[in-house]
Image 1 (cartoon, rainbow, N blue to C red):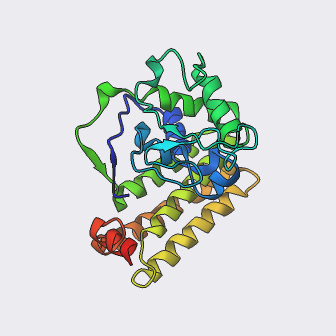
Image 2 (cartoon, rainbow, N blue to C red):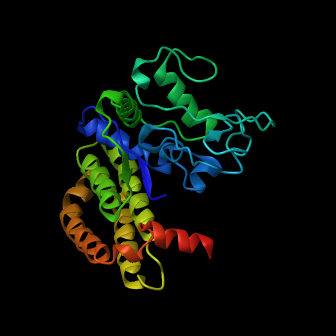
Length: 262
């Protein structure tokens, strides 16, 4: 919960950044998985296997998931607990088949995971293309050494990157990306102990509600263009203030371990 495998991103573009943000957000999925806050990233940390993934509804061992779970899908549910090892998605563009059925199409396989395995709504063509672009950009030749720490800075950067992608996306994709940014703000709040960070949490919660208002606008791109500069300045100030006491947050491994043991 405080470290992840380093992200092996060969190159970047606005489309890949959009796919990256959607990959990290429950907005792509549906049903109980989305309500539980699960995303593609939950099983595939930065595109790798999340060896610590352990959700009783989907697995009986870490690093595996039941892709035919009735909890996640009425379409694929088979009534049998049969988790399989989570696959590594790095270098997925070089593979010739995908999944247990050996699907020859990455696009068809990925869409079936979203729509059938997790009952998500079919994403727009542009949003789906961005996810595929992100997957195809995961390349083992571009893996930084070691693991990546999950910090206030990295969490805030995920929010900024989602909004930067939203600012140049079509309206439908922009709405999804603003949702992804909202989710990212929420994940920062989760790392702030309520007793010590009450003011900071309230500030981030207000910022999240402002993103919700942008998503509800009739013209999301126009709303982003108007509101994003001021929002970003307030967000950066809130991050700076909280980061001064980061060692007292749940970004700190010692603090997180103590909280989990209580």
